[in-house]
Image 1: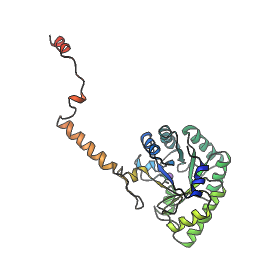
Image 2: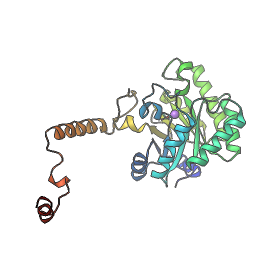
Image 3: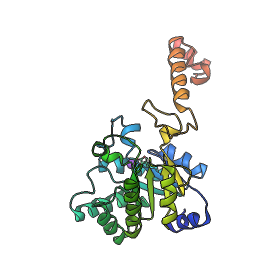
Length: 275
Ligand code: KIV
Ligand code: NA
């Protein structure tokens, strides 16, 4: 399994880091088999698999439940788990307790926290306790209400400078990587050049040291809105819909199950039964 040290080396060598979200056992297996470097059990699971309209309702118990399944499916891949909304902004001892619980119950390799400011001391505290932390800057879905929606961040010089400073603070607090979401690609280039730790971009351009996408978005699996920065690398939705439609039609038409799907009793047993 790759470690945080390997990710530093990959950045230094200019080798891109591939991250993908996964929320269950089969997705984790597919990701590991395909050579994904890092799996993220994102709180995006609230939207793409639980059907909520934001990540806000996602609980620590939800994250733990899904992360355990992902761990079982990807024993040999670095797994990052999101701390969900409201789980790391109160008392810092409480945050540490929650983080330790999440690490111990899931077998994750790192946790991810959104934002800087008051989150910086939390990053420092978790790292001091031995928990690798991935930071997350730019568009912060858990703060969509405060940001005024899901919008591109860091477009003005002032916002860009603030983000650069925050990225540096995350690195200094001990973060092992930083996710950059929905920022101009030129800003991604600046952040990536200034940091030793890798940047993992989503909607942040090719200049990031790595990329992350949401499983259901990149595979076209779901009925939710898919953002502009996503490339469709597959069409699982169409495959699922047409497969289910054919199943419904075949059961109604009695063409399924066929004999090959059925169990057959011996002729002599039948004779015994009917006499
Ligand atoms: O929850 C998630 O999937 C994420 C990625 C978008 C980075 O945080
Ligand atoms: Na997230």
